[in-house]
Image (cartoon, helix red, strand yellow):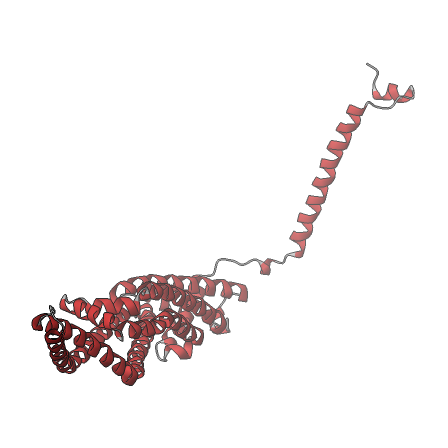
Length: 341
């Protein structure tokens, strides 16, 4: 086979296969050269000061002291002062969880101010289940909604806590010590992440002991409200019974008279029929009068009880978060905040 030189002398060009090989390896060489130039340029343009070295032990301790001071400051003031976004989130999330409860007040009143509703209440009361019925009508799903609300609140609190750390920490000369500002920021980031991990662990532990701060308190109060409403309903029903007895007596007398007039009806049977009719007629009238005179007041009182419960849930959640801050402060390892080894 003739060589490339011979081919050139003979006026023939290299084959297409040879040309492909030349282009391939030529391209690799060019790319290698470009990469090398970029690496060298980057190395030359990057000063040694721009590399973030691992913070020194002294700087790490100074950063931990600074973060500890911030946490300590939070324990001396109300939650809303240090964490206004979390305070707003508590109101928003708890209000959202309770919104269906307020709508259910009308449902409860509708069920109460009817003849069938009153007898249903009496049956439930006879079996000791009236409180459960009221709780189901008013507070169905509240537990689950409060669980969701608590999740949003704790997440928002952790986000605001991180933002507070980031905004309030300073890489002053006292914190920097012998390091540079880059090292200081690195040390602060490590200290903040470490403190946030302790917050998460503390919140998880306190949730068990405080029953998710406010959620269990809310459930306990729903039972108290249901018991109070049940007691009131039974008292009202008992008061109506006195009125209905007189109405039943009149109905029985009317029924007896009907029995003497209509052949075959019988005085006794007429009295029974009249008594039943009189009982339910008076029932209906008394309930309608009671609704006309007292329904608005009944709904307002139930609303006030729910307002009180909602406010207590919010207070318990604030107490839970404040307890978390105090717990983290008290359990921060001494070696992290000691100024010297």
